[in-house]
Length: 115
Image 1 (cartoon, rainbow, N blue to C red):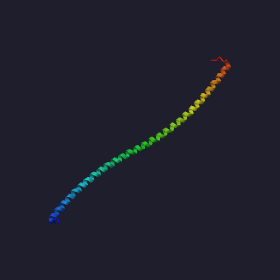
Image 2: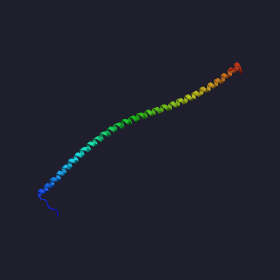
Image 3: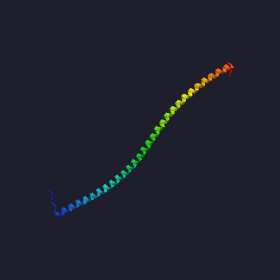
Image 4: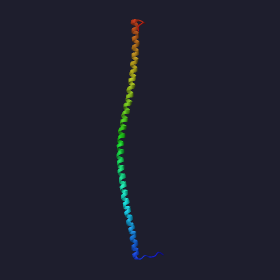
């Protein structure tokens, strides 16, 4: 059976327990404050990164729009080039026809010996 403590011993024991609890409470408070500061710093970094990400998203959106317009212009340019190619082929065909017609006229005018 444990030995019973007299009131003064019990008071001393309670004081020691209270002192330990107070020290532990101070340590916990200091740790909580340090953790709060660390959380605040992390929060500030997250906020700064969120702003950077938002700016990058805006930039990406703008670049995507520009790429879309550039692609449309490229497709339009290809269409114009194809139309020009068709027109050039038509003109070349007409020139060949005119050259043949010119040759016939020259042959009729000068005979077979024209240059």
